[in-house]
Image 1 (cartoon, rainbow, N blue to C red):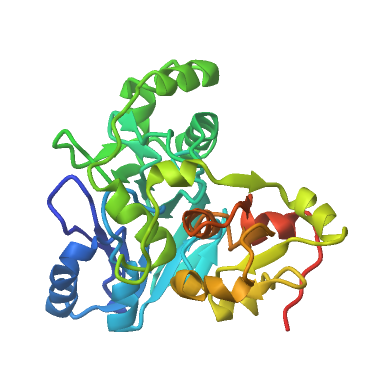
Image 2 (image 1 turned 120 degrees about the vertical axis):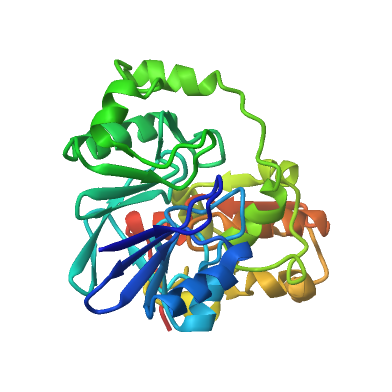
Length: 346
């Protein structure tokens, strides 16, 4: 296995390659450094097979989508990832063959709902789930400190003690650790209970990342600011959420709400299908096409996407345009599917 950390900074990007077959993946690439990654791939005579994000990042723009466009590599994320341009969604226990290597994916929700870790030989790439002598914050929307504790203790800490830990960030100059060292020495986890960890994380009161407004929604939607005028985080926090069963009941009554699906066409007609009667208006065109809803802005509107993230952005946009009764489908089509509610694919 050929292994390199390419950024030499607080944000870590790892190149993992099969030396025999000259196939590589990039884990957590940063968009600002794409030229560096392409140069390294060329220098080492490697073909990029996949670009992988361990979660939806809130402090830097992902390089996955542009790397996919430039190289033809597949973009890979957890099945709960909200972005539309993911070629392969993985679940807990899934694997990816990389020449003679095998990447094994662990679903590790907590920092974000789509957090995953990647085990390759005796190395685990832990994203923001487990840091060296720390853990990723769990106070963003969808974060869950209790789930994060379970992910670390029940999955990561069950790996062999000698397993090398390589996180997506480090702010203290550390470069590597091991599972055994983190079990014994991590001040947030050593001797800690689940309840104590939740209390500890709630008390941190961390400031938001400097670029969160600039990068989070573009990463979630794979769109730039020139394509969508993104709402503020405060506007997002005001979006009303409706559970899938409640929407199902509303659709059975007259008049039903107007259901707007803001995914891309390939998603609308893809494996998750769409809610019967939903109208497809991709997020990137929503503001320009809002007039298609009719002259009145009093009608009830429910916005839908894959996981409920892009549609929260859409709901905030519609509210800012004067629509008076807008809700977001909580959990999106993933949650709708889990309950076995009706879908169409045509």
